[in-house]
Length: 51
Image 1: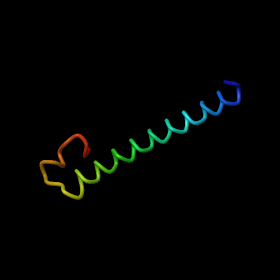
Image 2: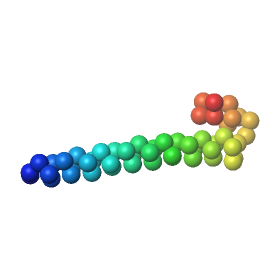
Image 3: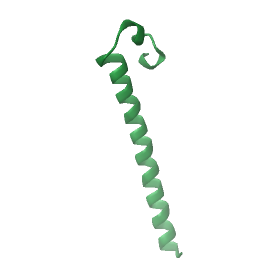
């Protein structure tokens, strides 16, 4: 591999890492929305995820 290919690989890997982090954050927010607001009961609202 030459330097150009190495830098391209690093850029693609970094991009994929950022996308993975963003999707994980979005998933956590969706779970919190569903668990705490949409189908919430008093018991579920007291969970740690809803604080």
